[in-house]
Length: 189
Image (cartoon, rainbow, N blue to C red; front, side, top):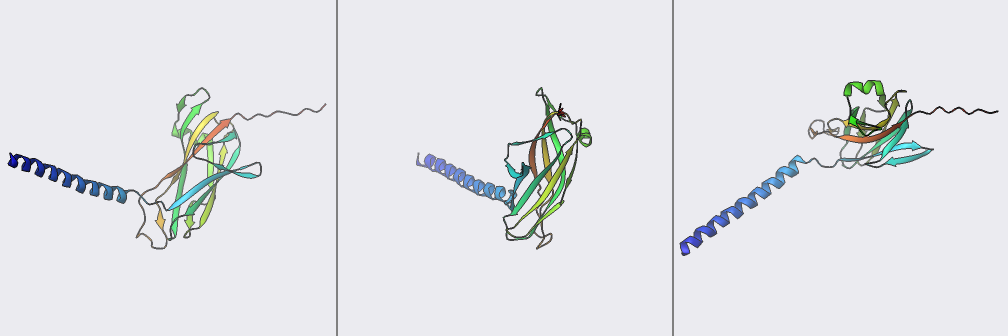
């Protein structure tokens, strides 16, 4: 009987040791694959002479044929000089006024033209730098809600080129409501 308990206790001890080793390994693997937060960003738009910060789930309101400027400010959270390449702007979804969601990426050039004032943001340690995204909406842009992504390239360390470069990239989400352009004429008698 004692021998039976000895085997059960031995098996439980082995299971506990394996679980502890696995938990330690899993936490190291997760930590190693999760990139450190090296910068933050803020998105803002000019609004009646003031700057309005756009939160994560807010939408920017524009009209057909309008041009919108969006300021994106990056702030370094590291003691090293880094560069953040800005690759492009992509419309990822479109929802029409009836609530139907769809999007064909081939249609993007007929809906928007865009440019960035800087295509790469160089950040000195613990300093901020900005780029201005200018979006020109077509006069016949479909009315509805758009989701856009500002695609960022691979993070680069400028103070030690190549040594610590991170092979991950990210994107910044933008929501835009496009409404119909109204050209109301003021008639003075």
